[in-house]
Structure formats: structure tokens, C-alpha cells
Length: 262
Ligand SMILES: NS(=O)(=O)c1ccc(O)c(NC(=O)NCCCCO)c1
Ligand SMILES: [Zn+2]
Image (cartoon, rainbow, N blue to C red; front, side):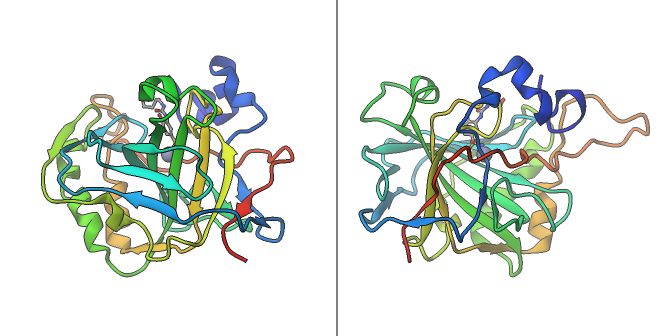
């Protein structure tokens, strides 16, 4: 078992998951003075359909909205191949001052959305792609406290069904995850990294939008309503809530973060 604090926390992940000590780990700090503009990127093509039945689970590390539609595809931008949406999830803090995994010039946001896609041109399954270079592409959006985000309510309204770990809820309504992304989808940073949780496979191309998405403080509080385990209660009998599920930033090791904008 691994977690985000104590002996099973990020500093010890490498003992059981050796890739966690690799040279292209994520997340990283994006030093905007060191990013390199790349004018060769084609427009990002994000085509999601709405009628994809998906199920929402609490896996003890985050909520995960799994998607099983072969109509949700991503290509273009820095990507050479076509990728298919597999799932999306978030990382968040115990208060609005922390929670994102990547930081920008040292600034940490309240939360971070990851839309996880796998390379359907190069691999036969997501399970194969997740371990291989160029196997995974993660669209990433920073989240800060501000005005309410109506799209997020389609996801948050199911949280009461998944409060406990291994809770599952089927989401059938007409929901398109594209509504969770910022309006500006042309300005982003991109670099090659890893899964930010064990097993930390170095298989991920991150595409991180510059524009930050706003959700209300009350909506952020709903993220924190999830519990970390199904049974164990603290000695005081109260639930242990799932918060601060973000990995500390990792060494860049000479990697260059490219920018789609000047
Ligand atoms: N944060 S991430 O880089 O976008 C990311 C994308 C896809 C993933 O599969 C993982 N990690 C993962 O699945 N770990 C297995 C145990 C967790 C649930 O038991 C992390
Ligand atoms: Zn993630």
C-alpha cells in the first residue's frame, strides 16, 4: 500500500516502485522563464462525445471517472499519434492554498484535473500503453477557488455514492468532460514525464493548459468529502478524509518544458 504521508508516503515510494526514482518523473515546477516556444505544434484536437456511459469510483487515492467510449479522442498539438480518453480524476488539498501537483513559478493551485488518454495507434490496450514511452497523454487543468462551475456539479452530485472507498456510481446523464477544460485550449505547456502515483511509469506526455479553471470554495470542499478507506475510523470515531493527494515536485533533470505560445 502507498499513500501521501508517513512511511508509505512519496519519499519511500521508490522502495517498492523503483521507477519512482527515475529521471523523468512528474510532477514538476514550470519555470515560465525557462520554457521554450515550439511553433511546430499543430492545433490540439479534442473530440469527446457526450453519450458515454461512465462510472465513478473512489479508489482511496482520488475519485476516478472511467470512460468507455471509443469516440473520445485526442490528437494534434505535440502528439504524433491518436489517443483515447480512459479516465479522469483530480488531486486536491486540505484547503484552497494547496492541492495541485504541478506548480507554475512555484505557485501551487487548489486542485489539478487530469484527463488520461492512451495511445491507440501504438498499443492494443490501456494496460499495455500505461507502461510504455508515448503510451499516455494527460490533459491537465489547474483549478482555483472562485465562481461556481456548473459542469463540475454533474460529477460532484455523485460523490455521496462514493464517499467510502470502492464505492461506485454509474453516471449516465448527458455529460461531456470537455466542459471541465478552460476556454483557451491553444495556450499550453508540454513535457515528458511519468504517472504521478505508483507505479510511476515514465510513459506520460503532459499537456498543461495555461488558463486556470474556477470552481467555488464550496465545490472544492466537496472534493474533500471523500473518505480514504472503507472501514477504519480514527480512534475518535470520525472519518478520515481524502485530502492532500498530490506528489511533491520532482527534479527536471535537464528536461525542457515546451510552450505552444510566445
Ligand atoms: N496522476 S496521473 O499521472 O494522471 C495517473 C494517470 C493514470 C494512472 O493509472 C495513474 N496511476 C495509477 O493508476 N496508479 C494505480 C493505483 C491507483 C489506484 O489504485 C496516475
Ligand atoms: Zn493524476
